[in-house]
Image (cartoon, rainbow, N blue to C red; front, side, top):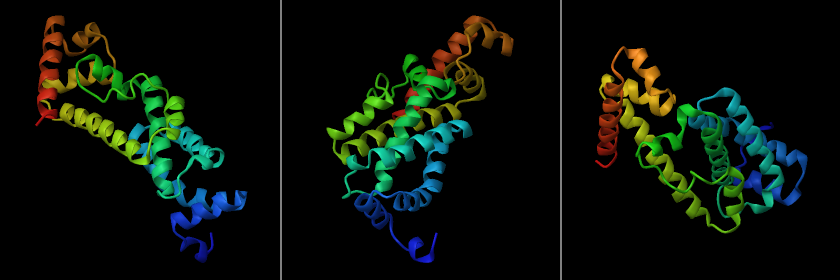
Length: 204
């Protein structure tokens, strides 16, 4: 990438690509957004293989769906939204450790919007929602999900370890009881108590 190209802003690079639809301008924009986008995706899903897949899907959509992008906003805002939706689909379908549905099953309130909506359907909504609508929804679910994870980490070990095994690792009650050498009812009681503590922490 030339020095002159490096000095161009995201907006200038995206405008060049939109106007030319050329592979050259796409590649320049691709190289500029790729590092930050990859870091963002990895921070959400914590999996290198998934990160590479989601990054590829997102940057492919930058080529195929560029006409859906509203140039009055930063190209990165649009791309990060697409990447985030892809991450949510992956989290729900393949990564039980970060399962939003598992948390909701145990009464830990996470935004309803994404729980029954595919990444594909979310992308279709681009045409009917404003950029600010998407930003607000993304912020809401990430804030609630990250708050839940933070609350779990702040629990005392006697609650935290069992909660992580059940809610994040999807272990069976019986297996957790065997792992820690405690009665099955103790496991259920600690999960119940841990859930209450998480809810209390999230509303502070």
